[in-house]
Image (tube, rainbow, N blue to C red; front, side, top):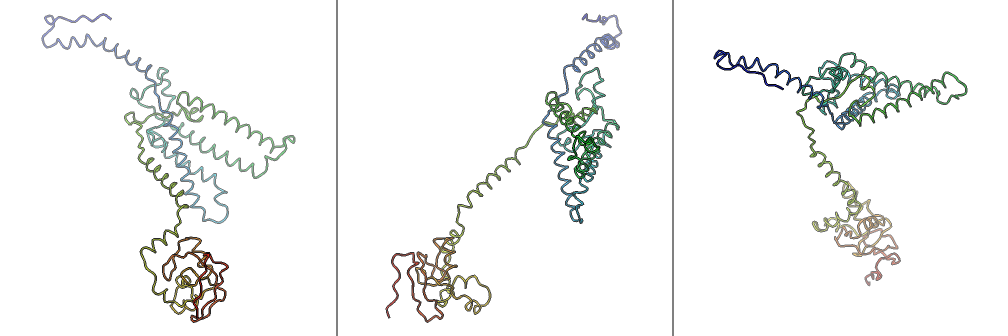
Length: 385
């Protein structure tokens, strides 16, 4: 391109030299600006990360599920099956409120999940008419949605889902699915058409998902039909993911799994008895009990001392290696839980137990001992009279 001829400084007035040079370069500057604008519009297509759009959809579903659970809890106190009977209406009301507050009354309409991902809807039909190219948000402002787009989206998204759910319930309760197709009745034809519509919707959803994964535009067929595309609200914010919460959850999950694996291997009764044996001495009150009373029953019962003494006589008495008597159930259950269980009277470890033949009734009686159930090979010899 030929450079424009500039007037000589001597030919122009001293104060008009810069003005003449600027006027001479205006045409060339305009041509360069147009060329740069056209090349930028062609070479900078708008690309939005697919993972951001899918994450926004998941967040919206989680929010809807959370609100629906709270709504179910609110109506669960009513009598009858109110929650199950009017579930489609409850879901429709919640979705209408969420989409209505998200798409109306703002210049950048977006659902709550989309806002968390720095996304909002724009009218792609208006942008597609700009020289047939996808424009960059840094060059041109995003065209906002028109009211008809937002209204149709709410009507088809909320109303269509409600009509389908209510219709499916109506057909199921009337038993139209069991009607024979050969009868050509109204019920059978309606059921067949509903099945066909459902298959077509699934095929369209699958095809739209494949196209979305290819070019990253329009998550659902409804967004593609209405020209509602998710774009970045601000290009300055980066997708910085903080893994602090995830790391904390992983550590806590691993710790709980370790505890669940370790706790069945630990004998808590044995550990508690071992600590108690090392830190405490034998209870002097239990050591002073009459020999025919069970110290374990006496220790577990509540109330006055007299009531405990009267109600703790050994039932089916067993003698321990230290020479004290206990109920069969009391001593056996504790030895099964902890083989190192100490005697509550003398705090010595019990190595064997054996059955007493005659149940003593008073403290002065000396019980006869049956050695058939003894653990020790050398039974204890009674004292000679």
